[in-house]
Image (cartoon, rainbow, N blue to C red):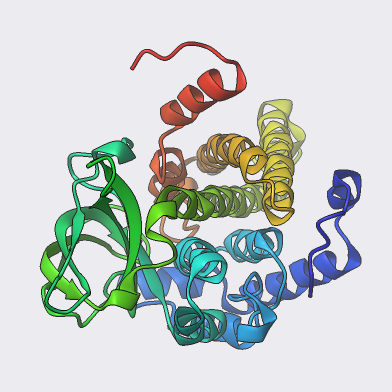
Length: 397
């Protein structure tokens, strides 16, 4: 499967037959597992490994990765379809945002031949997973304040990496973490971003779980790195192009987060619509009343609009327009997070007391839907981006 960079957006809006077939196939896989499988895994404290492995075996996890390394040769557009449809079936794979989308993309675009051979086939078939470490306790949304630093180890020719990260997803199941650090520019003395692959069993690489109120199989962790010795080839790409490489991963992250939110919203809306069609208190089902029907219709409209912006962002990214994709990806992430959270809230409200029961499984989505509004970047920071970069308004910071 390939993505044609010359495809006009008008054709993208309709989706090709190939993409529609992908959407239908992934939806069928999602239905085979469903929400009950997902919630059972969460309650048991285990991972959704069976679904992950099936998705990998069928080629869905690596659909965006190069064919020569076992991927599908498509793009982020197709990968976003996979996550959206799994989410719409009630079983989103959050690590898809990280492993194939961020890490797989960065290594495919900037990694050495050895790094590509080492990691991409496993990321494509699901046998390997990779986490992504950027957020720090004192940095938050300000990546310029990242203090994790790497310095040359003159004895080995490699690197010594020190720092701390927080809210890093799936470290316990990931074979490695792509860590964003900083190195000193020999010309200016300033620190510049660089990316390093740190394998999980590397001495000095420690992680500690953060207890969260989010019902998800993927857990959150703090990372502690104290002069972690890395080989020379742990550095991904060019030491002087770290910022470019970083943003090459952050745009797919935003697009995939939008897919996560759209899928979640679609699942919640589907549950609410089914309930509104069958629940009868007076002479007709409650869905016949405009007070119920109109808010659900509005949620559907807003989810569809968010999906269109997500598709635009994915199209621009796959076509190589990183700057255009940056603006669209931020807008898509904002729109999808708002639409997804609203759909979940309205679904719970539609079901009334039943919306808070374990039987219907919507209440846990209230917390999950907020993830899209907070991570990987808050909606307020996206509004800052749009006001400054799109509208040309002055900064307050």
